[in-house]
Length: 333
Image 1 (spheres, rainbow, N blue to C red):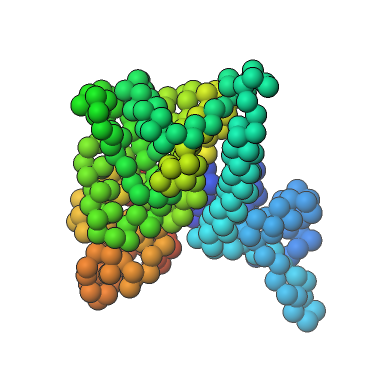
Image 2: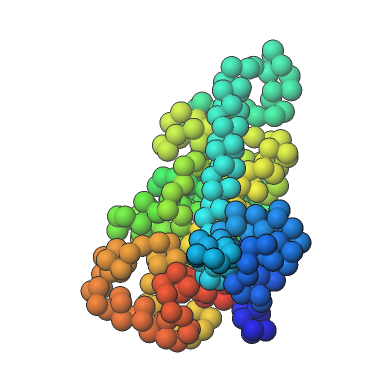
């Protein structure tokens, strides 16, 4: 039983709240437990309800003459329920951020610095696309520590600008940590995949999300640039408020943790063949065997053979567990 509890801790620690995990471990050690006794075991009815609401335990239907029982769900199912909950929480946070972003755009477009001098200190709406380009180049030339890119459209390299700034050393060459998250649609066309490959080869850490709904660039801790359209023809919102930029950075980190490494950024730490690393990255992203085969130009049989080999080498029984373990062990970051 001790090994089962240790396995549960390894699988769920850091994902499930500490208090909830303790309750789950207590029930896991007891196994099937009459509901009345379970309340006493866990410390009360409220604690019992916490596990049930979290999808980590279920109450069995009572049989004739028998009491209902509280049963711990399997560890992988408990983890899946928690991941779904985290995704829902992230969606709520995203909607709040997107709503605030829209309000910021509306505020900046309707308020002039003459009417409110503080407006220019908070954010500035730039409608000239050439000015947006110049500002981007200036930021790229002055960034000291970190350059973050979140893009819902065509990928752009950190120094994809013309003129004097383009001839200067790129942020990566200057030792700046550059990270970028792109929409999965970027992988649909060969030319876009090649562009992402080129970006990754320059030293930018690239990750992919199934859906990215807004774009932004953040330089260090205090400056953010948010294009208003994919082509930037309508300009961008330039934000200098450390508080607001800090919120954008936190949002980027939230997406970064959930994104899948692209190309060379997925390091092979287990001696696993590179083709299997690519399959793992796409599997964790949620693609089916057929979609993976099409993406990598392989037969479905070959993809399934690789997945079977991965499961055997890692001691995994299901596709879902394979994805979880691959991320937890740092195989695909």
